[in-house]
Image (cartoon, rainbow, N blue to C red; front, side, top):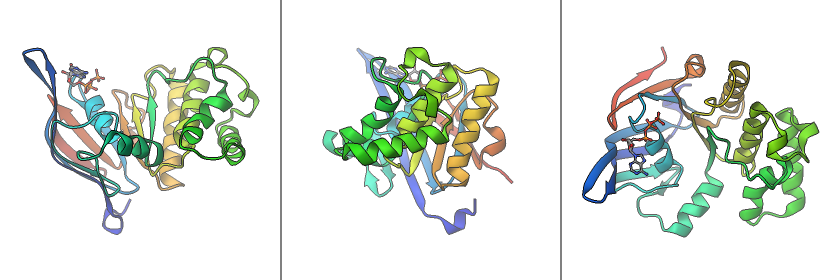
Length: 234
Ligand SMILES: Nc1ncnc2c1ncn2[C@@H]1O[C@H](COP(=O)(O)OP(=O)(O)OP(=O)(O)O)[C@@H](O)[C@H]1O
């Protein structure tokens, strides 16, 4: 990725999230400065408890910082209202979790359509787009299956389809291969890479695994809530 030719899409300054548990304060992340360009593939590395999920939750608009600034795709997430954060989550980011987070009573097709329907989009075009995405993800024969009838790899591919249904510019993945065997893990990382390479999406993956390493343009190393190193692939 030629960074000079792309815009800074994510900008954090002194970004901080302190959790308060009664009298005790726990550092999630602390004074993080960060610029991520559009179309970058970023891998977040760090030991358990180093702050990877905290940073992703802030970027996802699932949580708000206790201090500092965070601007994503022109939106100031520190000052956003609850309604603005909901809109942001539906329009700007797609989120993939280790535990898939599919709704157990909805089919693959229904799970995939849900974020677009919640965003008020009309059913028929949403269904067509969901079917296209699910075909692309090799789930065309699973549309009417419930999550409990799927393998782990199929569940994660459904979660990817759901993350893409609103055509987000940024894909955030928190340990996306953590519950998969190595073959399915590789497939998921290759799909994320294709979204980055072919479709220009910014992809940020927090992971302990090395599967994403060959595809990373930028590694961010976290320790105790602080970025200790930005390393660009040569
Ligand atoms: N909701 C919360 N309430 C209190 N403390 C929290 C909360 N979420 C995270 N923390 C703390 O913030 C710190 C960073 O946690 P975080 O989950 O971001 O780390 P991580 O790098 O994602 O870890 P892992 O690799 O194990 O998922 C840890 O000390 C954790 O205990």
